[in-house]
Every structure is written in C-alpha cells, then in structure tokens.
Image 1 (cartoon, rainbow, N blue to C red):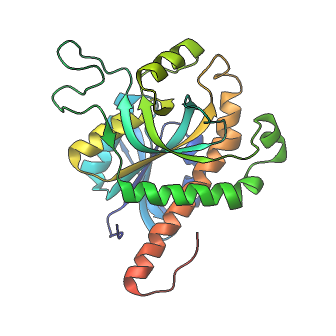
Image 2: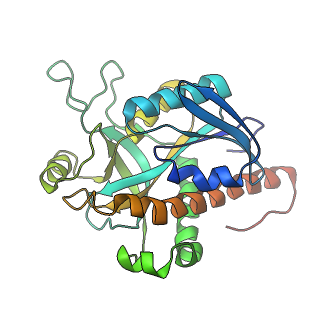
Length: 270
C-alpha cells in the first residue's frame, strides 16, 4: 500500500498510549467532535490524525466512524494494551492481530454464538500488508529500541527479559478480564486466541463494513488473571507508552520509505 495525501488514523484507548506521538506531532491542529479531540498534523513525514477513543467497543466504533467520515483516513491503526491468554504470550510481548472476534457477542439461538448478526461473520480479518509491516516494525523495536526505551528498573519489575512478537486472533469484549476462570472460559471457547482486550473487535467490524484498511498492535500488560489490575497504570505509563510510541514511529517511517521507493528517492532502514 503506497501512502497518499490522505491521513493515517491512529487510535488508542488510554492517553499514555498516544502521548509520545502527540508530543512529536508537527503542525498540529485539534478538532473536537463527539467529546473527543482529533489531532491532525505530521508525524515523521506522514499526515496523521491521532485520537483518544476511550475504553470499550462503542467508544472505539464511534471514533473510527468519525475518522472515516470526517477525516477520510486512508487506514486505521489501533494501539494499546491487552491481557495475554494464549500459551506462551507473556507480559511485555507484542501481539499483531491477523483476525478479530467479539468474545461477548452471543445472539443465539437466532444466530450462531460469536457471529455478528446480519453480517454473517464471526472472524474479521485485518489488512495483511499493514499487519506484515507492523510485525516487522514491532520486531525491530523489541530488538533495537526496547532495552533503552524501558528503564532497567521497569524491565526488572515486569520481568521483561526477551519479549516476542505474536500474530493471530485477538478477542474483544466490554469487560476487563481479571480472573483466571473468565480467561479460561474465553480460551476454551476460542482456543486460538492470543489476547483479550476491549476495542479491537469493534474497530475490525467498522473497518470491514466500510472497506477501510486497518491493523491493531497490542502490548501484553498482564495475563488476564487476578493480578491483572496490579501495577496496571505503572505498566501503561512506563512500558506500554514507550512501546506504542516506538513501534508506531517505526511504522510511520516505513510508510515514508514506501513513498520514497515509489518516487525513486533514497530510503531509510527499519
């Protein structure tokens, strides 16, 4: 996908996850719509609209629809934290969603469990080339940037030893999963799920219905168990914020490089 003059929409549920991007944004203009501030400007040579959606599926869906209709974004990127439930998904890992489901969608017996009524889909695919690019940028961040972006103390507190990038199913629901029993129930119903969060499934549904490319990147903050709320905000502020800024700055640079290739200009490196 070669970037055009249309902006890229960047969305998060918590302010810390976009704070670094807002600080770096040039020529920033703010437009308030529906109680949300949409920040339009330039990031690493790319026109972007950055917005805090707030938490939950309805909030995410409303925000993405506004990005599509009001700002005519070329694509959507959602960044944030999630609880790891898949085997081998550890705190500090990054998950790139290939496909999304809403684990709390259940209109049975009228429709099969998890199927979105009248859409005839339960699994919603992300845009492959965007997810490929995000995967490469996440891996480069963990390899080259993470050791200096996160303090030694925070790496020790959260046991961030050798974080990995995963790709696969992300599941969403309007509840903060913080109990081992609930997490086990979700995994039993959806055994290939890697992590659970509260917005991605709604972002996916809106983007699929409108035909807008999208990708979702999640930093694993907990294991969706009884310890999920412990030091959650410290993790968001000290770790997830640095992950989001670092990975997305690399992602934006990759977009700029793609434009340079199209124009014949020299390119940078991941």
